[in-house]
Image (tube, rainbow, N blue to C red):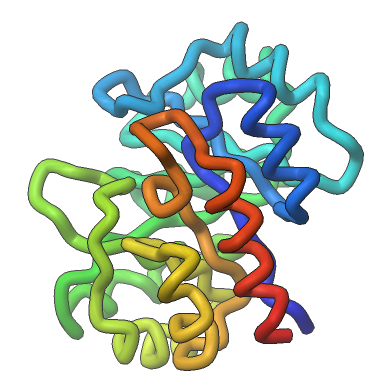
Length: 207
């Protein structure tokens, strides 16, 4: 089975369509005000309406309120939720039947101990960088991702992936999916279309 690709931090319709044309399976939309990739529900809705069928529309949240998540789902037509903060397992279960991914910032083997409590559809493994819940552009020890695969649901690998290193990451970890944001940008929130094509081509070449 080929590894899926999620392009996260989409802020413009032209970037979204370019990602889809390059073969992205999922697009991520940030609903977290401190992020340079934060976007309004209005803009996100305008983008999601332009997407073809079978492209996952992922809302990315950091410690949101339940009401805010439900409103954003309704306004933006999201079909997948990604929680990047200190959300509890009980909170993550509130949004069934939507697909839910829980993100974890991996620092060391101790970081893996909290994963099994989360019975979500997938675990997203990102780098630990103080004061940054994600999108740091920093890689972590992929051996820990290999260990995480033994613990439960599918693994989505994130953190510092680029067109240059993603093939090595896929070869080593064999994740269900890879997630990239800063690694395919010309500046925060602005995607480099050539980098997106190169990134996805590198993943597909590993099939």
